Image (cartoon, rainbow, N blue to C red; front, side, top):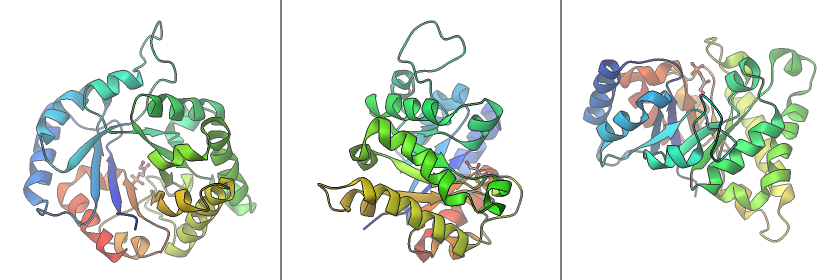
Length: 256
Ligand code: 13P
């Protein structure tokens, strides 16, 4: 079945010295056979060096964003080919901070998803609603719209090489996580939305798709969230910057 996956999104944190200490502590603390797949997503400027520090470990490298264009005059941007070239396996696309602070709309997120896949990267596609949308009963409609943009452009087969992440905006960095039941409800909806696109494959793509939860996951609440049947791990912000917390979160996937 689905192997759990935990990815650390370091956001705009760290320094060369801090990253070296964090990776060192992570690699020291990791069991020989981790309970899940693990990745860390440092700021782009640290990708190469972090990849070197991870060496042949079981921790994979991911980026936090990617340009939708393949090459050319796009000052400040980084292409999927470049991320692949420095050793990335994953890239986050559609994080709410990109959608909202940098006005990345559904169509651009879908193009980024496609750009990542076309260079052999596995996109971690984030979806999630604002608190007002949840309060208005629009959560499922928002998630469906965000997913549809990608499914329309990339097709359902693309979900064979992708990871989904449900990150309710109101839970990110707020200390207020979704309840396990709230997460499960949306995760089941995501899986059903993908399954509805499958005619030839009879729901197999949706059944194999890993759907992570992100938003104030900590060592103390990870196990109960990961115990939900459609929650296949987590996308971790603040708690991924502390090795002991992150390792405990990885171990909590055993609850799945
Ligand atoms: P926090 O874990 O800090 O709430 O952030 C979640 C997140 O945005 C991961 O991408």
